[in-house]
Length: 150
Image (cartoon, rainbow, N blue to C red):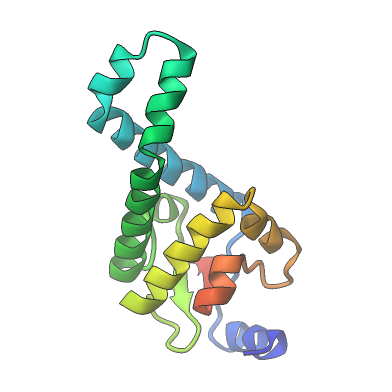
């Protein structure tokens, strides 16, 4: 779908794109929640780390698992509710462009995977959204989604 078509669709359906500040705060809330969860699950390993190097080693050991947790979290909440806990708190939601409803399993999974890829590539996927006229990040473009006010 071209930008003009999407803008027309947004106008016709009386939808407003989510402000980047709200999206940023939602991201922060989600990352904080997942980090706290990781700290709880790995508390024994973190508590036994006596130096900063040991703490970094523990973190690096579980980085793949943490990325998988992020994919599962993002996929489940976006598919089930159209928003993660952070997005719910910020009163924004994700819409699949083809249905204008919460994303399907495949769409939510695609979005979650590309979200993690965008993070791993120095957050370039997120920065892209700051310059896109429709505020779409790489993961929004890949999954054909938009983030709008709830």
